[in-house]
Length: 386
Image (cartoon, rainbow, N blue to C red; front, side, top):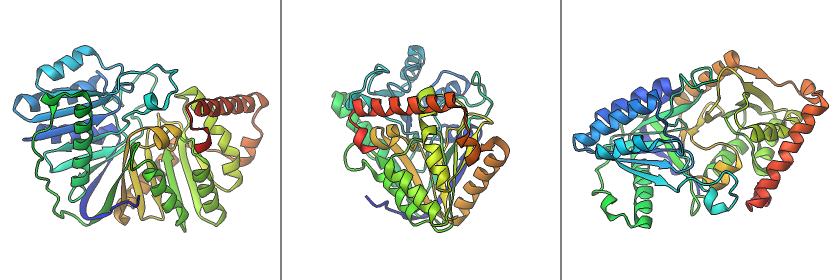
């Protein structure tokens, strides 16, 4: 489905939790009517407790506060923290309970991976940042590298409808009538700026391929430059061929990818794709300064996206995701400058010839990981789709 672009927005790019969490907390503390928060992970750390206190205070002063977390992503959310939210009057729902890490059935692997918030119909947030501290995580050099967008203007309406729809869907499915939403809030969706943007989502019904298709359309129409930063990069054939095709027709294609080992299998499996991409002229930079968690791109200095969707089978075939796509040169220039700074200060360039000369043991590890990942995808029924 083609993204529905709306004019007249005011969008603020937020870099990592250092900018996102103060903006989110301020919006929650200013709330007067309703708060919706969706997050894949919700931790009981310094940041989690800070946001929890803001949510609880809002609920105690009569704001209708709705929090939706994923049952797998938030499996470590303590029961005491859930009780604290509920005792304050926060309505808390779990999207599908925790599953076994070895479960491969499609239905059980479908998760809620979105990171979204909508407050009072006047401000919203979309991005890749969970409710988790990105400054004091053990084994991590702060801050975790990620982005979100603060939204005002006409784009508020589709974001508000998105979070309300999923809340209603879950409560209806569980017959929890006492948790149903109050009447719809009026949304302050009058033009407030001059930026053009669209909300693009992925679900398991009408929007299965919307995010991937938005990427592919922008990549295939690129004429000068593609910069893509993604934490978990394991694209399917269509996506790989689009990137290589762009590079072969003279577009400067730059990938900023995770350099640190976070998930061992995916880390090594994704590297099986490097050789083909490098041979086609794609530039690859691995980010080592901290953990890369971003899911963003800038194309031709005009088209940009920020959101929760990785370029991997989990995000493109299974999870509920949400991205904002922006067509605005000022926003794109700001994101591009931030990405170029990250590449300069925190990334290593992967050289084609040195990559080809990697030791045999490392190459075997990469191809074993790739083969096993493909096997798991086949067991889950997605082998032919990616």
